[in-house]
Image (cartoon, rainbow, N blue to C red; front, side, top):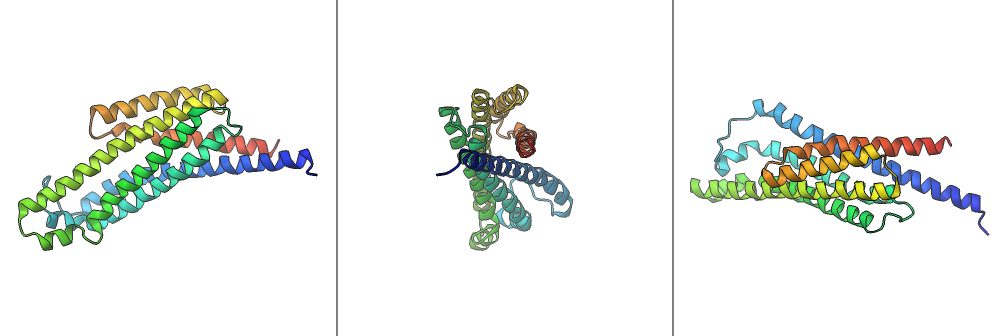
Amino acid sequence: MTSPSISNTTVASRAHRVERTAAFAALAAAALYIIQPVLVFGLTPLLPEIPEYATAAEAASATWQASLEAGLFFGIGVAFVVFAVACGRAIDPHRDGGVATQVAGGFGLLAGGAWLLFAGTFIASAGVGGWADVAAAADDADAQRAAVQVLEAVGIGTLAGIALLTAATIAAVSVAARRTRSLGLGVVVTGWVFAILIAASSILALQPVALLLVIPWLVVVAIVFLRRSRRSDHA
């Protein structure tokens, strides 16, 4: 027969692993998202000037940049999926949060999937069948510009979807964490404010700049999980 103390120790150990997994996934997603704009601004002077309505041949000159960004966005998507799964278990280990925890996990998985789809738009422009192949297959400049604009529109729409799903994830996590008291009131309120700002940015503008607020939110949540896990280890 298993000793209650051993059983409790095993449960606590699993809880700590889940908290650390959620924290490291959150930090990974935040770090990759910070690197992306730095990479873009850092590489822009090195790239040939591309007009606003570029042909496929002109867009092909930035293929290597698109490949790098695809890798970053793919990494963000994977990290966000891991975070969504682990975060739900970390904030609600006893399943006291009810539907809110399941909703938070669901929105988190969808947001991670949307990041992967966003990475796919960059892969489509850089990989096999990318702009270089389009330019070789279509001599009509107007047709090339139309193809570039269509893929850019898909990317912008996907990014807006990412913003809405991320806002929903933050809001749902905040609700569940408030019910289970797994995050402090300050973190919960900040999450609600960030969720509103991100959603408003996505709805009012097709370039949801406020999505960058997910970076400090992920970092704060990661710190909370790491501190709680470390405090429990020394208890």
